[in-house]
Length: 241
Image 1 (tube, rainbow, N blue to C red):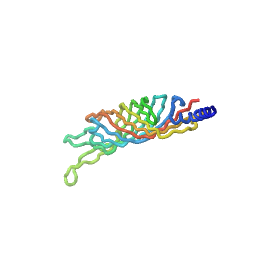
Image 2 (tube, rainbow, N blue to C red):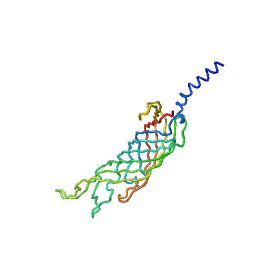
Image 3 (spheres, rainbow, N blue to C red):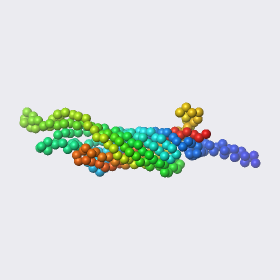
Image 4 (cartoon, rainbow, N blue to C red):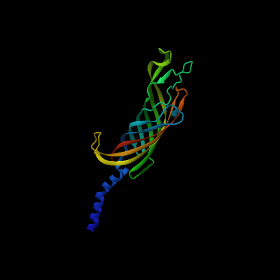
């Protein structure tokens, strides 16, 4: 009898530790705050690929979670290359380019807001599809060209002036976050309350599809961009008492 009681006491003592290792959701508050930072790549498709090449993306953002819902606010930065040297199709009467893209690698800056729901969670892996909206800006310099004859009478293009230019981008995005847990630990709750929280870090792999359209290019171009990012993600959740 005493031996049975000792075994039961040992099981009760070990149960909390076992539950922490399995991340039993009943131990945590329903909400959590987190972040992610990482890098990836972007590849234009459709008519977008006529004017732009793919690029490396650097990303970061904040997450707010409640139960299985996840709200993500992201920023992204990249430098895609131009394929078309005259995006606005500006020519003179003889069919010569009147402008050239002075920046071979324009600056792409974008923000996104997505709402997702975790549909699968097992062991150290969880999957969260998300959908949302994106907004961004593509910025570059334009060389305005004039043609003059040199001393030998040969007509050559010269840069008349250089101006900055940009195109605003609005579209939608669909992504899937695959979170692979790296580790978890108890930490002091950072918001002044006399309690602890549980911090979890994950490797987040996020394939995505986004849509963009450039109305002022000549001709207009639009299409989807395929990409994937790999990020370090952290999440802090309060412990129930």
